[in-house]
Length: 428
Image (cartoon, helix red, strand yellow):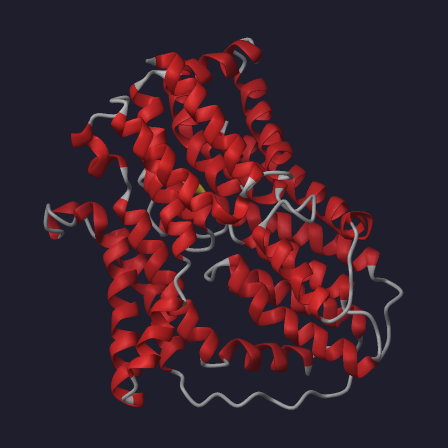
């Protein structure tokens, strides 16, 4: 049975890499085979799927869709541009703005919001938007690891390690990963200032985008506030049936409130359909399938076997195992999607920490830093990068890997090295 599980797991990953456009169906097909072959018992399917994670992702995506539709992100970007003196600071400001937004909004959605602003500014200045859009994409990837709702990988970590929204800020009396990410952002911003030191063209004042509906902004802020409140509520105040689903219920409830309000306001059923379409169902189905696949390989004992390989490779040295997890994650995530990678590695990392009797958060945060930032190295390493380059392609700019990596490599290495050092100093 273990041999069958290994073959099926490896084949699943090969297919995920080979056919990224149908990866959700591949994951679901693999999950079905795991169940049909009896590798994962039928009665464990429901418990194998982390429904809190699924609900959080769906609800957050839905609210973000309403937020983008309200044009509030464009207004914020316009105001930021009006505060900066020249192109250099405009690029830096847009990258930082994308990072701040991405701490609470999906990375791809962030790029879709901010990149068009950069393109518009470039057209007015008759200059190329390539470097600016690249900076927006890689900055959004960096900050996605800062909070529980910033990226799918963060939500996966929160679900697996039972971390609340506030745990990303302070955990067990120590600084959480939020502060590590911000330190990485500071160092990488210095790198960007060096790269764009010669871009000093003046910028004209932008006409401010008009926002007619502020309610979606209230919903997005509401998600953050309620997740913070939930972080402080003890389990005695939560019904047993929904205790493990509270974060997901919060996100979905606010999304449904937004949908119902939109339906009442527009009196158009198509408005309801547009809101529902804003959810990325491919990602949700992919995760659902992967949860079952991972449950199957765990049941077959593969997670323990993979953990033992890492431990042997590091010779039982905590610093070496931490280093291996961080930099292997950077390397793998530069070429493969970090969602299936993180979903697979979380139970492995947890098992390593258990076997070696060490603080698991050291390895969890190292995994998240490496996997989230590693995707920045190459044009295909993260969905936000692909989205940004797609926007440029529509504008007539074909970006090769060399151009992309002139910015992404120094940016990524500076941020990863900063995070790598700080996490070790704080959590070792």
